[in-house]
Image (cartoon, rainbow, N blue to C red; front, side, top):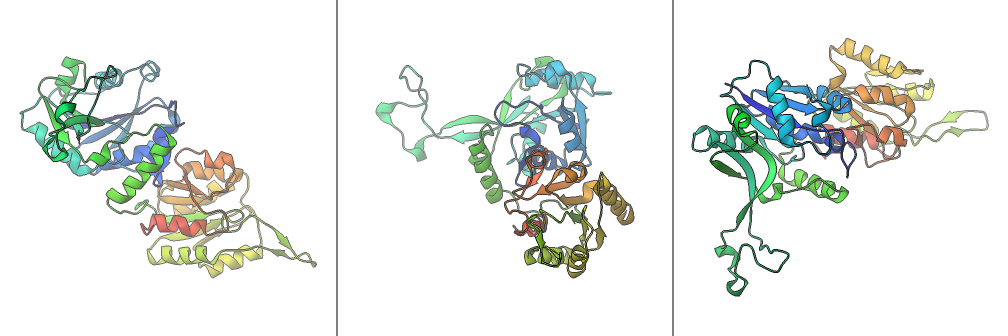
Length: 386
């Protein structure tokens, strides 16, 4: 009997395009719930049900050993399709399904979910006292109907907050039920329902840009501090527009000059001390870049890489290091960087990168511009120092 987690995600989002793979605190939104479930000792498998090749590609690059992709049908990925419809479709397609197994339905839009929440809720469900368990938060707010009638208190005898028991509100993080129960009830819940109360800060919605900003701050405050990606083994970067501001300087004698930021050089040193290799891949071919690479003690330097050459160079580095592209971080800013950015395990760009780069699903858009220490900013995030 397994514990199977299922996260349904779609391409479409009426408010925030590609919301489920939009970067939040440096990682695609889907990463946070998937990584939380992956860390749960009680969870055996995690299936992410999607109709979207872009999402499937991002999920495949997460490098989480329990995570798999389920390709949901188009009819169960429309704006009107219910979560129950895709959940039931998934169970009907699951091979050798044991009806006594447990299904945990998890919403990708709950990045504040932590492993202990899932584990404690599964323990509550395993007692047999409840047929299903859902996550909620306590609310001590007073509610009214539109016709002026109070719902949960008597305004003539207003209780003190400390004496008010309050209500429970679904926060949408997860729902637990046996596979047999889901199939019988045709619903995520059924029978005697139990509640797992989560902290009130987990009652967040991710529908508007301001929700995104608020949730990022809550994650930074409440979630355990951790590196942006503990899986990264090599950081690679472009030059013009990343290590420099993209400006070309020419002297009277035709000498070409570039302006670099010393903070990026310190970033390379910090990575070296952390055992992470570094490299520069650029389409230009100049002695200036060679000298800068030597100064920063970069492990790899590939110049003159055009027309897909950057991706080929990164693959060559991976072969030498015995790693995959999922273990590579790459910072690029322009069109000739896109093929590598889409394949790297951690893709990032400066704040002034071209729009096509900033629109890559899951990319980390840094706050610093090219030449203003954007690589150092990414290094700080990778090492968990930010």
